[in-house]
Image (cartoon, rainbow, N blue to C red; front, top):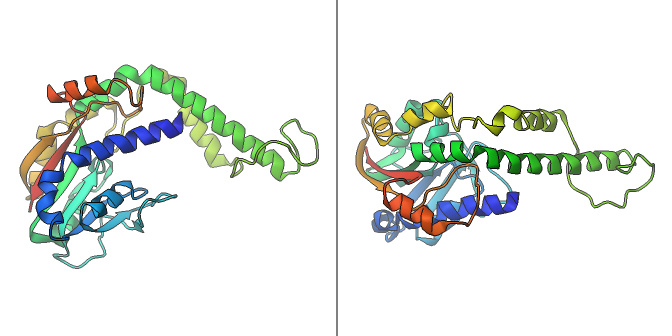
Length: 274
């Protein structure tokens, strides 16, 4: 189920990127340099390369396995010269940045004078859907956590020369990777908190889902950007409605598209000029 949820998230990001082709095409047609912020495992960086960009992707903690080489880097201090990139792109990243003004200032510094930034950010409707589907998302999450804990307990027992039943000798159960540690237990306790059955945890740096309903409006995002002397040239409502707990992946796609067309989109792209 977890793998399907990850594939669903990748698919939504890919669909959103497809809707930005008209904005990006004038730059990709001349093999422009593009800096991706928060590249993760390079899934979108690979697609941007296929569109014709010369891509540099950075992330504080690049994920493996990767689709594209992602450098370890922090957008609060970009290790690039001034005026280095034609385009700066991020997908659902800015809501995680604690020092957003510093990061935006750095992006502005490395952007060429005629370049653009394209940042996609979540909307309050994402949070609303997440809150409504939280009980379902919690139950799926509990199943995943218990499954992972079981696998790691078995791996820990095997390391000690025991099977899961406590008998000595080699186990006939399949190997499952890393063994259990305190970090795993801490994450599991946090995830299994029964309050999460009804209360969705916040996403990014907002203190609560209630705060997200205010912080993620287009007006609030525009204000943050303009405070850093960045001009929002255009906003684009992207084509899907979804919750962030990936409930019913690849289901009800037609309904999701209809909701987005009626203004209930889960993500908006902000096209910005310095």
